[in-house]
Amino acid sequence: MARIGSRLSNAQVIILGFAAMILLGALLLMLPISTADGKGAPFSDAVFTATSAVCVTGLVVQNTATYWSTFGHAVIIVLIQIGGMGIVTITVAIALISGKRISLRQRSAMQDSISAPNVGGIVKLTGFILTLTFIFEALGAAAMAPSFCREYGVGRGIWYAVFHSISAFCNAGFDLLGDKEPFSSLTSFHADPVVNIAIMALIIIGGIGFLVWDDVRVYKWRLRRYKMQSKVVLLVTLILVIAPALWFFFFEFDGEPFAERTLHSMFQSVTLRTAGFNTVDFSLLSEGGLAIMIVAMLIGGSPGSTAGGMKTTTAAVMVSSAMSVFKRRRDTHFFGRRIASETLRDAATLVTLYVLLFLSGGIAISAIEGLPLGDCLFETASAVGTVGLTMGITPTLGAVSRVILIALMYFGRVGGLTLIFAMSASSPKISKLPEERLTVG
Image (cartoon, rainbow, N blue to C red; front, side):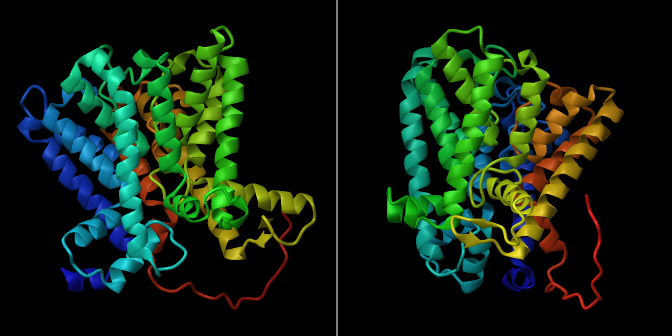
């Protein structure tokens, strides 16, 4: 096994690790003990659910609360935790706990997995990530436990608090509240400020990235000393939370009382960071609101986090590049630091890939199923952004459309560049062709 692993690139290890975990999860969910009726799930339902859990998406074809047993719920939340933290992170964690020596190869894979700038100190950083993950998830569960215990009793309430805390922190969007109304997500707690605020805090903390945590640990409130990436992540995250929230507040929920209006606006904006929970019925939103949601879902969270999407830094690089053109500047920069040309090419490639997959997937599903294109595009944006929000059409889709969503969820979680590098592990080729100017625009 070690010899096989040594022949694989870090990118190949990551994508094969996710694939193996999805397959194992699907096999576990097919066991009779995993479903409430004791018959086991068919492979199509099991592999879709396992992919959605490992890829921390939240799209489902069966009502999670009533279709799966307690054992099935436990399998799903373990898959979410592994998928959110990353296969390599969990592997290194197991090695640390068992006292095994972490090889240089494992350290390098870990570096790529969490987008760390260098391999030095990666083991210590892994321990820090695991510790904070446990603390945040425990605090989230403790905050929500009273609300769930009042509704479901002590034992079930505590289990629900733990499940939803892990699901929120990992930006997964799976819930167990469909026992009242199928696929209802958190709508029954739409007016509970504690549950709403706890879920939002977990989503943001999990989605800003592990390297931002490290800067916060080292520099505290001295923001000027943060790495450029942390500054960009925090700024873009703030904009992407506030801007949609303002739209929702003034144009979508204007008939509600001020407190609920504010809470609903903030929650729907935060959940677009690839979390997949909702507290309102999206069918009531305007087309403009849904369009904003699609764009935000495609952007997603930040590098080296539990979130998916093309990432906040990618969007920031593309916007900054455009601003450089508008201002006739030669270089793109943030906070007094120039952005490398390779980063610009990577960002442009990611945006192109995500938009092509989002559009082609939505058009294909619309043609196959005969459904409105807008609903299908919302679903594919949710899948490739690993968000999990839905217009309610996923459970009705046929086999081919489900395969499309599975592929989009997988692509969205492992990352476009990871897949590209995995397919071509050789060093980049340097072009020696003559240059000629091409007019654009």
